[in-house]
Image (cartoon, rainbow, N blue to C red; front, side, top):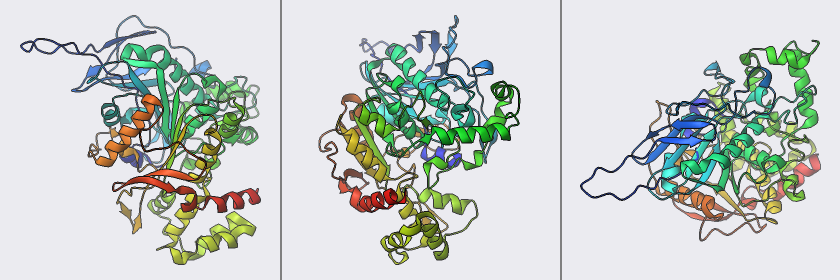
Length: 524
């Protein structure tokens, strides 16, 4: 949901599935054998490459290109190949438009990357990690998960999925049951591929964790809600994408699709779908791309998963409560200062600092008759600046990204499976125009990932990073993050992570969740 430079730095995106290779013992005088970099998938052989401690496979197709007549349809099986396919270079990112690159990527983008640590015996647990980017941007190939996979001894798989209108347009003329959720259909197809093929890479197909951050985390929530995804993963990790936050409604998605068809000059044609399928991909990727940013309301994103549809019959929390979704162990959390990113984006775009007058105007416009109550709870005198006051308020409100909807979901999900809740509170130390970034959206990801982007230096190894990787990978291995972290008990308490301490904290009180439950319920 941020500009790509930040996503590179924070790595707001996808993990790759990683598995270890058993290296046979050899006499001391012999050169150690090199691990075989050729692996057979159900569509043909792929050849990756070996590093000092990993096998790496990039650009492995998990579905046919969603082009031509396959546009706006659920993904189809990949066509088998006979020669050994090169898997040493990443495939294209999915078609997208960004303010820093313009229109880039390709519709032919349904590929995944696999990082397999080679230091221990197989089979290994598998983590499938989905990148962020507001459902309108992102690229799994930029994220180097070797700190995570090597440190946690898990296979990490990262995969691309369709974005923007190409991935989430839901027009009434579409007959496919995945209409509005083609990007989620891609993710389900990738999870099926993992179940079928990961054993050949040294992974355990019966021990798969789906995980993601930001839009990747909301993708996890959608997978949990999707009946078609049941049985494809054994655990789930949602980082800064609360499953208690509602996805887009079918009615609103339909209104946006009608507007999009009009904007693209397809609404009054004889066949709307033929018209939409004939358009250049960049025309669709440019549709409302400026709205792809972290926002005070998740559903302000122009395109995102759609609930109330055949593919997602209910919102994630309702799907778990009614049993139509997946009831699996979950690890859920947010960062303490999530919405400071909104202020940072404002400053970077030249809009300046929030003034005291703007602060009050925002609250009165957003909360109406509850404005005085909100102003009393968040008085400017308690904060160093209106910027910090507004960022704190928006984080606690939670309709963008915040902890309170996370606790609401944990309250329900913990009735059926163990749920572990965290809050990441270590500040980045960065300051922009006098505004401290704090533990903003995406701040935790550099503790798990390096970047393949040539401009990015590897993240230093830290004790906090080692702790996070150890507990996340332990959860992926056995469904519990380890000793000392109790499952959620409906008490508002989560495990807080900072560089100086790891401890239980009353997150519900810290973020005034009782106040917001009352304000937002009465505001409906």
